[in-house]
Length: 179
Image 1 (cartoon, rainbow, N blue to C red):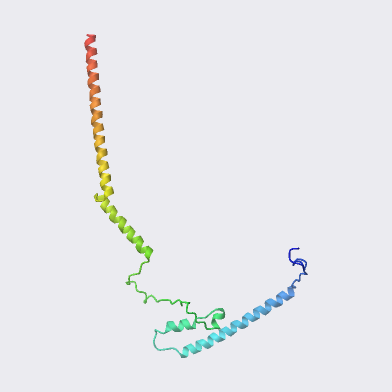
Image 2 (spheres, rainbow, N blue to C red):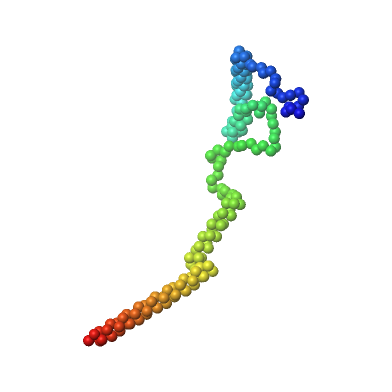
């Protein structure tokens, strides 16, 4: 069976082309439609501004609420009132409303990270003081190594003295035999 079924594919159909005059006419119609929509929106906005001026309250605390309600909505949002319980409205705070003195709640990860850093600092302080098991083991290992090095240095010194004594004795024997 051919690719497209019994009737055939789309490739054999007659293609139609839009003439340049039709394209120009469509573009002009679209521009006119946009101008009419803008004029209608401006007229609607002016009517809302007039209504808002009449409703102006004496207190300044409600100004931010009026600004939010008069905010221009794009698309269908201005035509249809939607009450979505899951949508959280973004409320902007003024600089005077922000409280810097209030302690910020840390997330679990941030809290754990701070605890981890503090524990590491405590461990390092105890380690430097020699109070941890690892520090005690390190100090014991260092003491053993120092002892071994001291013994090796003493042994080397004794061997050197023995060689010098043997060399001096050999020189003394040689000098006696030459006389």
